[in-house]
Image 1: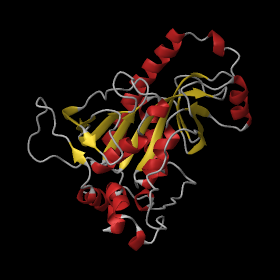
Image 2: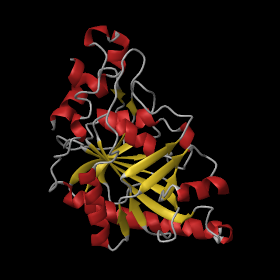
Image 3: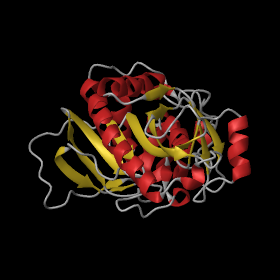
Length: 317
């Protein structure tokens, strides 16, 4: 297990992991879970997982969106979480992003593959194609997007908000399974749950943004603070409201696109995971906090140390 994963497990004294359900059976020593998958709209279960068990992780920031399903996929141990909960019960603003990312950290996850449904802001990005964004523009205003505060200050670099190495694996996987994916692009993240106005949509196009969604930037910020690599499959379901034919698109068509995207992204995820062991983590994501904590260590309140133990334990122990 990597050093950061060991440190997280050692210092997460305040976080409790519930015992697996009685129906969940595990044999022998389990491999460390270093890869996490967060499923968005349409992806509430990960097909192909075997030897599964559900884990309810209690974090210092509350409960994650749902139980985390840990299992084996293409020979790798992975952790899957439905971002909106199974059955899509949680709106974007209501998601406890801190608990979701912290729970992954507690389990030892070092890399997160995110899946989300988005609208297109460009003519040449049609429905059923994917974008693997390398930039975000944050238009949210009603959510907590940092682990810091309450007596401890930290500033992480976020100029490159996704992991370039992991993003490359996602694009390459799409190519191998025949899914059209675009390498790079800007994802504008709005608060929701309402979609954008026509004026907003035209403004985003003038700003040369590529896709629009409601979740990824908050996850990416917290993943960076948790020193977890983060990359995203942004699955295009339809054009945003700027498009002349937007109003003629039926709900049936959108759901159909969502279902097809979900099938395609699962095939791509299988391909990523299959190659996962051949791509060592040699990026700087795992060192994001090395010089980020500005607060004098001797002045950090014990309550803050306790709360942030899963995140900063290796720097304050």
